[in-house]
Image (cartoon, rainbow, N blue to C red):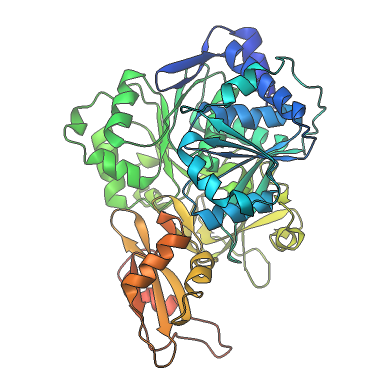
Length: 517
């Protein structure tokens, strides 16, 4: 049963009235029924309003995966506020930027990250209240307990933003994608149909909740009354054991995690019979790895192609497609659009649609698409062509309606499921005194799909100590964004107009590969 969702709290209210004593969320050794979860969400919303927050105000959440993140997201939906879920892997300067950009007045921070927040507290322009979650000095539980359990009377419009997830920007700074009740509700409906979420499903949420593949994946299953199992952080052997112990029916991993799972001794003998859907995406899955996983796990695989700006997945390669002997080439496909989403392929210069089989830019249209980027009207306008959102990905459609990603219009590097935009890394490296020019590219990595490589040119008369440059990067960039290798070059290749030819830098590394992803 797929419920129409006008407000993202509606499914919680529905399942609370229908199954109040049924388990809604499990986390470590704790569990909450639908009744308990509903009450906690309402208290969260009321507590926000008691602090003086008003409709449209931003709340920030910083921690590894924790049920309080979903409670806050849904609490914001009730209060009319917006939850900006922060990437806990960001370096302090990056966190400072995102917190100031979001204008969050309330910050809920896990005990593990309080020292980082204290180190940047003086640089935060808008945060006026900090609430510590868990640990010896937990404040979150008393904050909830002191608030009434009645839902605030906020008449949310379907187009109201309640969730703001940050995507790395090509301009060198992250942008806040504004997701609405309509966009996330539409995604929950389409994803539920695509992946077969049902009332008896047990859904493992292993991706970070600051990812759309974490929060939207969770909300989609919750919309159908499924039980949600939240994994704080991925430890492959423990994840595999939990699938068995908790009879998990649905899970979603990046390919790097699947590779780690396959390396666990005795994995082929693990009982995974409960799994109905094993989704993967976020970075390219090498065909050899995919075939090994299909043979080893013996479960239904689904490839997921999506993005934050689409509230999650918008193309799926089904389990049937993975096992179709007549079309083995479809293992390279991103799949076909989910219900409610249109995808077209256009010439990125003319904007005209191109024939099937011709590579162009993917553009999407449908209710799942975000409202825009927070406080970035120009960036928002640049990403839309009428009602069509420009994904920045390049590929083709075949005659049967399957889409294949061939390359990226934007230069995003996907390493272990994390998007790394070169402009962010280049912005940091260019501040290093001995660097005159820099170009950042992605090169093949057997473990992570891609790794970050910086090609740098030294100022005249200077020499660059690569070890010191890597240390500099470590101080200013999240771990997954840091270059794994640095190449010193006499000059960067450019075209006649002076634009750096990154394809020339990438070409030697991707030679012989089927696609430069």
